[in-house]
Image (tube, rainbow, N blue to C red; front, side, top):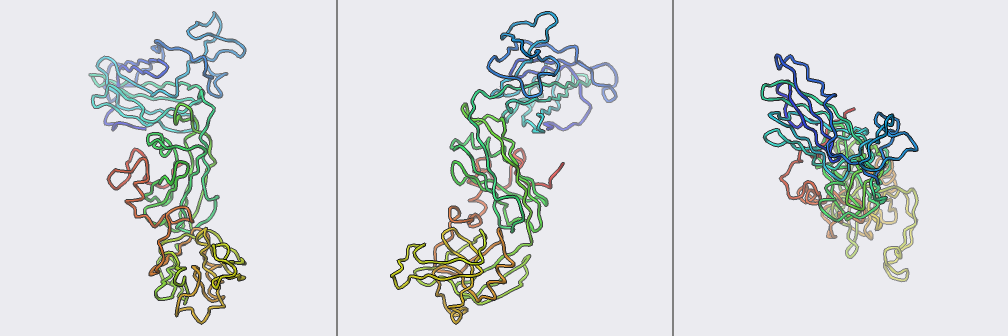
Length: 454
């Protein structure tokens, strides 16, 4: 990535210093600095103080690469290759940062470092242009290509491309990531979930993890991750996802050091698309539900919600699933079968919105109460015809909001997807990258989602 504007063609003598001690120099040629061809410094590469890590192994695919030691031959750290024998490739320690410095009167104008998987290494350039250093971890067992552009005091161009390999991590413990939900088509309220195979409590380590979980969306929106606990993160947009959007989720953590005993593992990518925006607002005070498609009213119907003592939760809920038929028993929510409140009912056209048992469903036994009073044990009940319509139009990720109930508020986490009940400021506080920062994502962390690029 570019760390400084390319305002002119660049030049000079460059010294590239990496964790394994490799140095690279490049000197510019005479002539007009705007027309000069950057000097090829291939003959000026030297390895000063480089040591081979005996416990590391070359990255995959390097055994046949130039400089690799033939299979079956061993070379001790610091030992020179025998005549006719190719030297063992030098391996950078992935736990150490990449450091690039300019010697003499040169200054660095641009550095890009990218591995074979296309992951760019973030970095910072000093104000005087003498030093660039990485600010994100190197990946283990990877091959990096570093391109450095410089200019000297006369404005002559210098350019150097260098490739190096990193060793495999010493620890075998991996942080695997499982993304959810399954790939598919969802409503605009569907959050993204990342489940970690190991707990991560330290804030600095959480920043590494969070920065490695990448989301691209088309059209672009602003969004953020929120740590639910040490092993679960949720991602949502500032507002609901746009209608008919495409969302791609992937992890760049593979081979990245999280701590001395934990390194990033693999994760299967995820692709979601969204449907039209569907929001149903159930007014418990008015005993009425209004349905909106893309913010335009398309349906209105009488309902009944939770009666006193069993009030329906207020707030925004996301459809979790649907069951054409479900048998509902009071005992499943702690009501004794012998109690006057006990029930055992066959229920049809049931759309689930909480794990604890709130549904939008057909309730023909209370048809005379619909639009009049609240008589349910917490569900939103309606006629069979209206429940069938709701079932056929709504699906996972669509939104149901309950207002004007005397019930508690919907939990943000643990009982379904109540993520939207946190305002944006509170949501951001749960991000290891954005918590405590002014509203608006930090550009270097790429948290403003932009249209996906190839």
